[in-house]
Structure formats: structure tokens, C-alpha cells
Length: 145
Image (cartoon, rainbow, N blue to C red; front, side, top):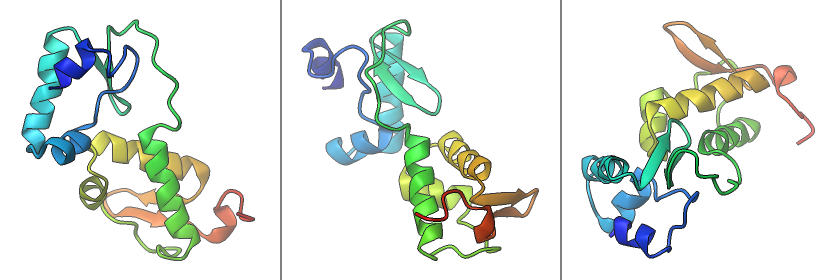
């Protein structure tokens, strides 16, 4: 079905194909089946994958359509908003990688990129082997928001 959408032009070159989560939801398939779809389309030369960004129609040299905001940044922005609203409090741990992976339906690398983005902005800090915690409000970017 996805191959047909690609060959018919419904998903044009450079566009992202549906994510694993979208395939699961739209077609009622298991995560392993959704992964297999991307793998088979890659093997057929119809798509290519960029880790942490998605799977795109065409060859790797095909220009990608402009994307609004990378998925990891969208997730980081949602977590930052939850921090801002007080759902996650300073010096308290944010949910684990596994919990966030399940909540957002994404791979571990996407969550790790999200947490790294939050850390770079000053929202969180990580204690090795302990977890990631919300930083003090004075460390947060754009406190006026």
C-alpha cells in the first residue's frame, strides 16, 4: 500500500513516509510489521532513512521537502512546556527513556536527541546512572514565555 502511494505520487520524492507509529495506527499493524515496511522499501530503493529524522521517499541525494520542526525538537518542546507548566518540577526526574519512547511512539535515539536538546537549552541536567532532572528555573531559556 505504501509502495503504491509512492509510485502514484501520493507521497512525492523528498517527502517523509508515514512513521512506524502512523503505520501502526493507520493500518492496524504491529511495530515489527511497520519496521519491515520501511526496510523492504529501502531494499527496493524507494526510500532512505536518516536516523532520528525519518524515512524519506527517493534516493539519499533527493532533496527533502522542508520539514517544520524535527520530531526530536517537537518532543523536546512538549517536555519543556510540561516543565514550564510545573508538571515536571525542578530537581525531580523527568520520565525515563523507556517511558518517553512508549509515550511518543519513537525510537530510543529520538528520545536521546530530545533530552540532549533540552540539556543544551538548560531545561534539564543528567546525572550519570541516575537519570535526567529538571534544572532550576533560573537556568531555563526564555523565562518570560
